[in-house]
Image (cartoon, one colour):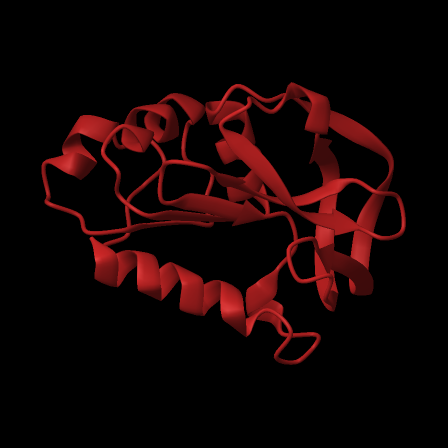
Amino acid sequence: MTLYECSVQWKNILGTAARVMFLALPYAVNNVRQLMDSDVPMFGICLGHQIMGLAVGGRTYKLKFGHRGANHPVKELQSGKVEITSQNHGFAIDPDSLPADTTVTHLNLYDKTVEGFRHVTKPMFSVQYHPEASPGPHDADYLFKQFLESMERR
């Protein structure tokens, strides 16, 4: 695994023959936008989710009250399963701003804000909450499994 500073240009990252990208740091929106064309699997968490949303052409907005704490119910839309999540953010992605080649995958049950989305044709997805915090404690394990499967397909 190689960690990159947020100032590293996308060309330098692709020059390393990276097999996957895991976004948990504030990579620049333009770098993520350029990396999308590489078909390198990407998984955005928290700020990574917002950066990926901006990279695909979405917009973010400030929440009146941020999401803080370890007991936020989030619904995974495909299965209908409700997860208990850990959250710490003050912005959300505007669902109406997401392009047609993305799909919302998760909604916050408190205020119906976007908690996750996936690109339809590229191996990239993200969640606004912190699946690595394990408040469920295993509610979000499937996300890491999906990410590993996208790495293996590459």
